[in-house]
Length: 88
Image (tube, rainbow, N blue to C red; front, side, top):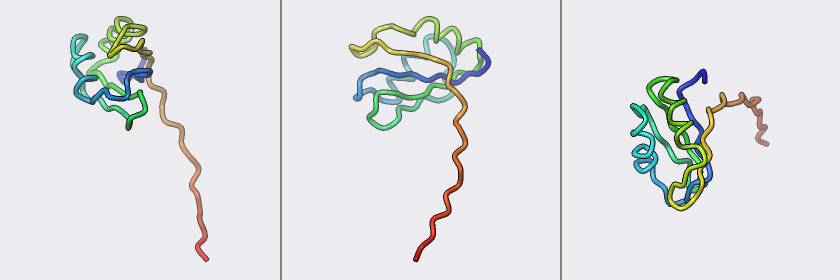
């Protein structure tokens, strides 16, 4: 694993940033944990790639809030082309 940021998906819509952080804290220092809206996914950044790998291996496919979560290395965000909207 090259990066320290993880994508976490398929968890309950009621999960909070704090719950996500607590889940991953067992595997190292959590730099940030954020749930994206009420969509059942989010991102966790660990303090090192080694900690991220350890958390990924331990948590991928495990039960969290009644659902089997998916943990992968986060991919870089794709750049979006600029939109030039004309106002009339």
